[in-house]
Image (cartoon, rainbow, N blue to C red; front, side, top):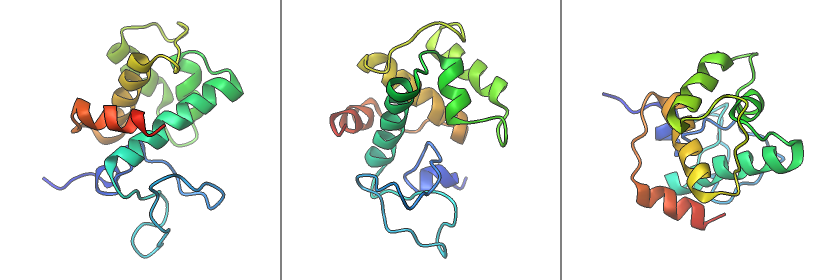
Amino acid sequence: MQLGRGIRNNNPGNIDYNNSNNWRGQLEHDPAIESRFCRFASAEYGIRAIMCLLRTYQRKYHCDSVLALINRYAPDIENDTSSYVKSVCNALSVNSNEKISTDDKKTLIALTKAIIQHENGQQPYSNDVFEKAYSLI
């Protein structure tokens, strides 16, 4: 079985490339290799970027629930956001409007794992990879 695009790019959150973002560990953009999404030097850097985005969404835009976070992270324009919210809520055992905190390490890691699972249809990374990614924040 071939690995999904997000896993191959070390970008399991499928974060779009934007030339105004210079993520730590991000590889130089090469449209011949990947036209739309960021590529990272390792999965830890890609996972770190997801965590940083989620924290920014909570701190800057006051997205304090799974519903608010996923609506911002994966808008309806190109995602089945309601299905996305449901799968993340199930993984976290929370209601869609229940307040969560991305400042809580356990919550942030669980949220990131759920996003990776939804984006890729699998979550192949060990807890050690998430611990390393968290330490890079």
